[in-house]
Length: 183
Image 1 (cartoon, one colour):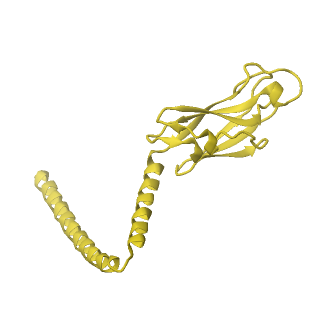
Image 2 (spheres, helix red, strand yellow; image 1 turned 60 degrees about the vertical axis):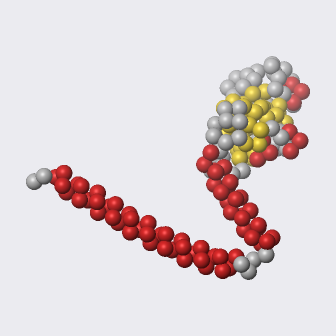
Image 3 (cartoon, helix red, strand yellow; image 1 turned 180 degrees about the vertical axis):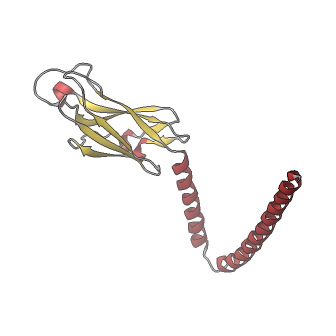
């Protein structure tokens, strides 16, 4: 039995079903447009503009979710060496997050939020409007959290949330040895 004829028949059948479905969708869209135009004639200009703005914001939101992603690829002390003594910013420095835009879209650092999962609350203002920075794809932003860099026996766990992104990033810092300035 020649199978080429069977697969060709199936292809034609699938294309015909697709054409019928597309015709049905076009009819539904035309009916919807006619109904919408009757409704829209009763809208004020401000109401119509509001609807258009909502639609644009929805499209932008979907675009951000698809093309936006960051990663925390390194955590360091803002000091080049850690001094022995009390555990404070003066001796240990503060914890810096090195955040890379690995998405396809430019993001503003004011779109980030920092959640502390384990450790002290941040006192830095790296995501505040006063420090607004645009990150192009592959750009790196160093964020001084204001959290004291942890000792070898301490752990800090942070979550970086990018508004509009489908993924949050959790980063954990637990230096392996005393005096280590990175994790």
